[in-house]
Image (tube, rainbow, N blue to C red; front, side, top):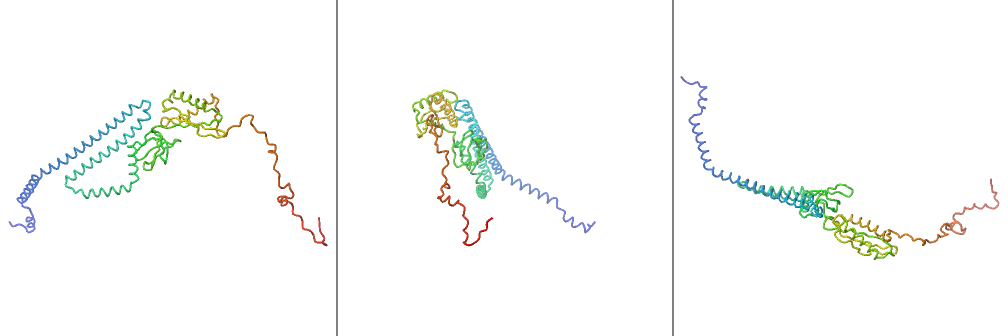
Length: 364
């Protein structure tokens, strides 16, 4: 039976089952051959990448744990001396804790960036990716970000060096130029200060050009006492010495005084007064309290010894008052009292003009 003409194209387009099976067999054979030829290289590459990732992760974990243990040990050392006499000042636990935490955070971030960044570049290199354009693009992007965020970078770097150098810490009294007060918090970008009136100052670390730390090392309490010129300097020295001896034996001044109270001598000598300078070395930050206590005690000691303290102009002694000037209640003479004076002539009334002779004068 002959096939219809309409079915002839379909019969021609029908694939040969034998040819399809042959092509599939060839494809499978080629894939198997390709895998057989390259599986060793793929396995080597995979193991190499896995080894790089494992080593990077292990190294990062070890470094971070080591830094954390180091910071914990530093904090324990600060807490161990917190209860001592000078522990709260020299090794302030909160100050050490914040400083160590900030340093540890920076070191951990830097270590993670270096380790993971190096591992990423090694993985890309193992995949035969050209790193030249990537590094060039990263360099351009870094320069652009550096110019755009230069203030942020400046603040960050300044904060890092301030913390590493321990220029100031929590509890210190500092003068940062733009603001002054007690340090409340030290950050990598911003330092928080509490002013004398209780206000909080947020100072960017990049804006701090110079720092005056009033809480490091030791401080000096200066007291100036004005007495009468006729007072005995030996009695003054003896009174101050008795005050210093008593103050050095009482708490808490025995810890705040780091040296003897010294009479430096006469700072100024005038006709009505002379100024005696007293100085003492104190704990940093305690110089104002020590100076106030010294003034209080010196005033009491001078009153007990009969030494007069004066301020400003010297008071007048009894019996030395000058008699009153009788002319003080008399008004000064006036220029108008003298008719010949220019002032009296200027104040005189203007006379009327004289009438011409032969003219009649009308008066009311």
